[in-house]
Image (cartoon, rainbow, N blue to C red; front, side):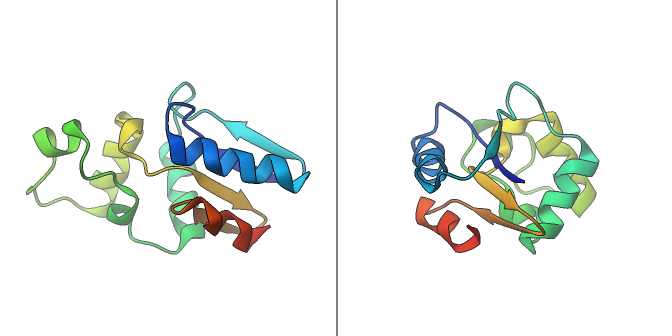
Length: 113
């Protein structure tokens, strides 16, 4: 099933949601700020994306700059930081079957539909 990890306050995330709505496919919306991801869920998403955990971090967020920037962090440390502070997760993320994509730009979502 199609799933979008969505932040309604983010313009790019809203644009990604609109692409899914226009596709007329069934999908699930996960508001990850309201229902935070577990370490296992986030680890699986990162695996599906085929990226390093640091690539998924929003490095301009205040919390990243104040608490994590410049520190030596393992992949597990980075994943835990995103679980503890979901605002750090880049969005939107769309998962479909065994594939995932970050919707930046939102048109990237079409590549897995």
